[in-house]
Length: 357
Image 1 (cartoon, rainbow, N blue to C red):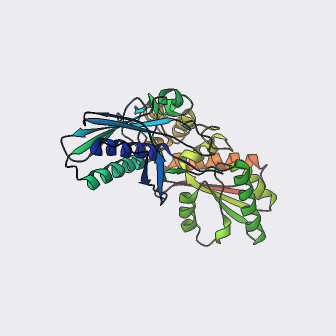
Image 2: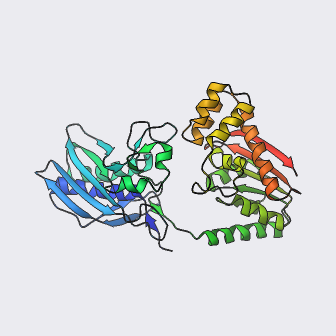
C-alpha cells in the first residue's frame, strides 16, 4: 500500500518553499525536507505569491497515500514574512485550529501545531536562512483553507481545538495498513507464542508500552509480548482459543480507560473516553465532589491522570484496572487470569490489578 505524508511534513515543505521565494525571488517547483522517519522527501509546490520582498506564499497538497484520512488532498499553505529579530516565529492562520482546553501537547491559546511539526517547520526555514545568508528572522503562518470544514470530521471540536484542523505527525510519513492484515499478524503472533509453550501473554497497544512491559516482565520470552493495537477483544478471544491461561495488559490510561468502560475495540472512532465514567470511578475511590466535577469536564485522559496523581489518589488507577479486568473476563466468559498495569508515557506504574475468572 502506498504511504503518504503528514500535515506537519506538508506544512514544513510549504514553509520552506515560501521562504525560498521570499529570500531568492524564485518560485521553487519542489523542495526537499528531512523527515523524522530518517530520509529526505521532495514535495511538489503550488500557489506561489510574493509581495515586494515583504512576504511570500507557497502551498502543497497533502497526499495521504492509501491511508483513509480526512485531510487527504487538503491544501496546506505557508505565508512567510520578515521579522526584525533573528529566529523563526510560527503560528496558525485560517483553517488551523486554536487550542482552548488544557491536556494537549500545545498550550491553551496557541495554534494547534504539534511540537514535532513545529520543529520541522523551524528546521526547514532555518535551512533557507543559513544557506542564503539572510540576517533577519522569519514569521511563518500556516493556513489550511478548507481546514474548518475538515475539522468537523475529526475529534478536534470535542478536544477544544476550534476553527480548524491540527498540524500533526511525529514521523512525517503516514504508513497505511489493512485492519484485516494487522489482525492476522496478531493471530500469528499469538499462535507462535502458544506453540513455544507460553501460557502467559503480555498485550500492549504499541512499541512504547511494549518496551516498558518487557522491562517489567523480563522473565518472559520475547514471543510472549504481543502488540495488539486497538484490538483488545479480538486478541483476548484468540489468546483463549490458543490455550493461554493468563493475560496482562500493559499501557497508558488513555487507551485502557476505554477497556474499563467496557470497550473491546479502543480506536478513538469507536470508543471515545467517557469522562463521566472516570468521574464516577474517581468518586468511588475517594475523590471529593470538586475534583470529580473537574474530571467530568476534563479534555483528555492525560489531564485526568495529572489531576489524580496530584491528588495522590492511587486507588483511582487500581479501580480502573479492576473495572478493565472484569470486562475482559466477561468478554471471554471467564476461565482465565487477567491483569492490567497502567503506566505513564515514561513508564511509571500508576496502578495494577489482577483477577482470576
